[in-house]
Image (cartoon, rainbow, N blue to C red; front, side, top):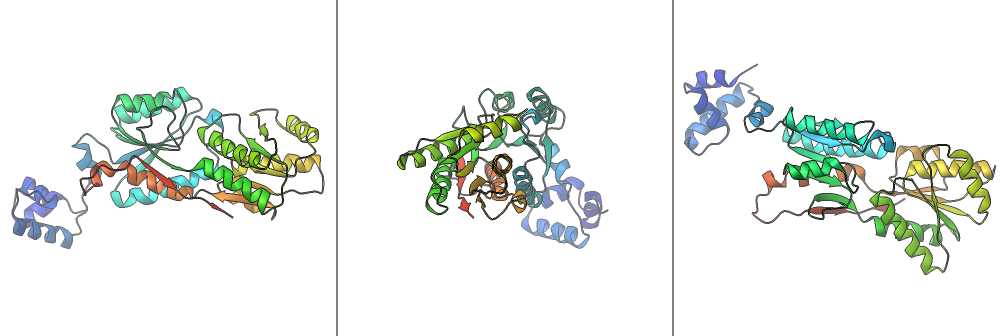
Length: 325
């Protein structure tokens, strides 16, 4: 492998001069820079971006922080698509991603702390947002660069990428009522009270109340859920459709509804448009939030401090569109 010492020797300059030339340092004349860069290209020289950044006290790594495994979200296909979008944008920047996970919030926090203090990771993308999160508080205290996927709960000055979940909740409900002939949908969510779920629920409630119908909300429990859910469904025979906060929740509730009503089906609208819908029938519809684009946009926002060429104040948020299919 060609090293910078090889380039310096071939160009008959010092290693420091070769390094400055390859980094377009204005202290080196344009002619010398071009000559050394041409030699480097001819020799197939590949710079060590990580070593270069480490001299500045930063690793070429972006930490991607998952919610704690106790929240049962890491297997959600939505996050796989987000990671794909993140990686797609990191590659041309010569960065890699490193995932921070843990069974409990304390473990996630310790992983992030270790990334910062031992691995010199200075940039993070958080796949969640909730009040009192020790990770977010730590990153703010350290004045590190981070982007939240989802709307910040505590500090609206945080950088974030999101969809308009309130409008998506309205649009999904109106699709159920207007296109699929529903009259009495049930809104199904997790027990975590995530901010995005709350916004989607509020959109659902607004759309339902316009029709003069009382909103029906059901919260799936973490454990021993099957019998409770089927009993709820039997207590509400008016349910003729489902609106769910994500595909997995919608699919689970739909399964329980069919257990209570064998051989029957009702329309359902959920969020994320994941591959799990391939297991469902034609009655299942989904709101595509384009998670890969969310991941890509998060990286773009994460690097505006280095890449903002216009001198203007970079945006603190990016809101992406959604689509019902």
